[in-house]
Length: 381
Image 1 (cartoon, one colour):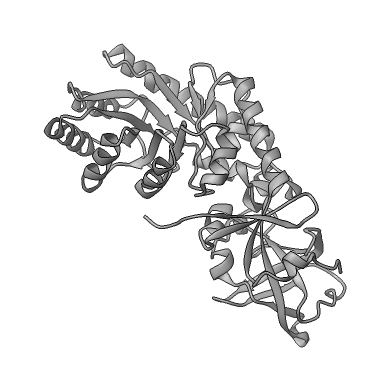
Image 2 (cartoon, rainbow, N blue to C red):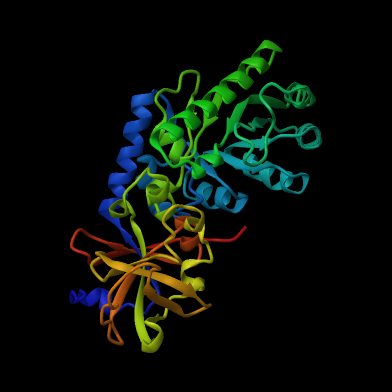
């Protein structure tokens, strides 16, 4: 086994590691894709929840960015980001918070997909005398929420937003079903389905008198697979910054592109069962088992040596709260490698967002695997 650098050996495990060079390459790949497609990039920062990562993702300080909580909007606004899309359907109870952000000079965009929410937005804006900008969420794939691009409700919701204080800025959609694609052809087709649904919905709004200048699409798989985005103005994606095993299983990255891992220490063995026990359980990695429905089930994560090299045949097969069980995956032959107590390993996660949420900071690695910085991250709502 590789001898770990002193700065890794000194870390108390489990610890979240971030390979800066991989992250930078992933970010440049998405920027290049946005340039090729002729759209602006509005990255989703729910994955990183980190100002340091955000600034490297955007390469500027004010936006545009996407968030999934108003706490994220607050945090990034405090650090100078002013162009923010809150990309979860707004509820009446959050409108006072949204108005406070607007009062601070944040260009906060809201999202909704029903008449009740539309009426609440209009009422709040008119009462406060504050202008609000709204995107209508479009269902492009039957995966989650949103309005049908050809449905009557799309226009009914837009009409409910007619007010001096509210603008229908356009539409947004997210092809979550792309996570179930398995071939480049199916990913490309899903990207086109996403694009066409959003563009058609926006045109219907314009035909009935709404300006709807914004057409916002994106998931990491479709963003990286789109052949063209005619009619689209912006691209949203988030997990591309780090990637993870689910994205590798979808086929949009290689395991070697994944920038996040969890450093863990061997604490014991159950040799009769072929188990190596480590001090990273689901509290360090999350319970996400997103690869279980993919052709290659990676358990709770792929096991690497301390230098980040995959150890063939090993996965984290099971996880308790603070204990992980490393074992040969089903179907592997031969004996597991000898991993003495105290050995440092790295676990590559299924879901970067979920694993990151378990930690308060990134230990940032340089090209030689040394910790050079520690970047704080935040969580909660």
